[in-house]
Length: 302
Image (cartoon, rainbow, N blue to C red; front, top):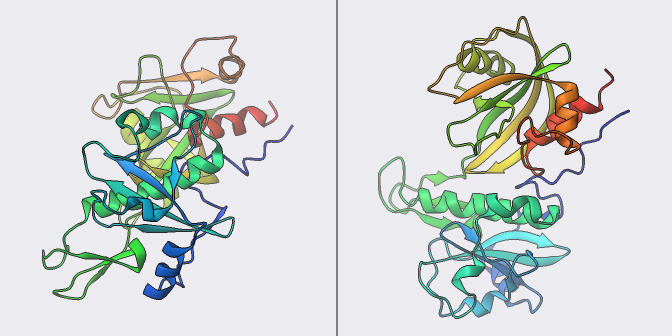
């Protein structure tokens, strides 16, 4: 039995979009905005507007004229099936385009969305959140301005160009025979467990981060970190690098500042949870890399 994780419904992974990062002149962007087939998706307070069918609410960009739009204005996401796609972030308050209830928390409804829609919304959210949090130049402190239809920000005072932050994170399924180590963060719903994860530190390889993070969070020593696959993750903009690793022993020394709980779970129990014949823990949502790491492990022989 084998498990192919591609294509995976990962928030932020946008293979269906042509990003057009090398062709963003003012004239080209104006042409895209004027294209009668151009579409825009809309956010407010970091939440996308969705239809009752849980698809992104799409309108022509010109319908946003007269709306109260936050910096950076229209963000050109790229070409979707050859047609221009933009994202806008509305200021707080009522809109004549969509109802307040149409804006939904992406993390809450992610499992119900079409993978392609989830990917587009994830890319848009990553860009809009970055612009919202980086209005000022980190070098001189002056107000920066969006350039290249939201691809970068540039400081008019010192001419420094700022590019969107993507933070590398390792997420690892720690294994010992037919057991895997799962953890529960302090903000997890009751009963929910997932793979361990942590940010990569400067000067550290992903493999070194796997070993360090597992030790820091659970006291478990691991070896042989093995890269499996990757997921963009817009909460906020991160790149999740998925690994497995082998534990020397099963003794846990929990770091309660990092995790609320951690436990070893057998492969048979994980399989029963995925088959909905056990409620031993609540598995990660379907659109997460943790879900697919567990699926990958279940597909391995043994």
